Image (cartoon, rainbow, N blue to C red; front, side):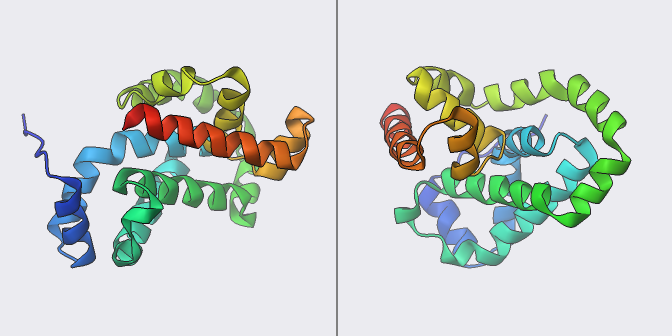
Length: 181
């Protein structure tokens, strides 16, 4: 069994920004399970989720030199790259065409994979941390980060003003930062 290296975040950032190819293997080993869980939760199609993961890691490689610590931790930035890539795919015309043609098998696949998605997210303890939030914050995090809703869509779904959504998600993110710090 291959032992995972524990490398300080500052060293990972330096390797990523200097375009050292070793860093991609390290990032994949450390974060791929968590990222895949989030991507799969948004996409709900294993094959497409794998493609999205590849796109996300390509974006991480291409834009890694633009990462700065004021954007959050490296993991948070990588997670957002993967989640945003999944959301972009979800909203694409290509995805909608595939989704219409393959609706039934995607539904069945989503049901079968539901347990593994939960395990991937639980592997980093993300679900436990989110569950400690107030219910209104937890609902927003689930809609925005796990289901790929925009803030506007979440506002309509929850029947609350857009400003309230923005305030609550900002508060939720601050609470999550405090919990994991």
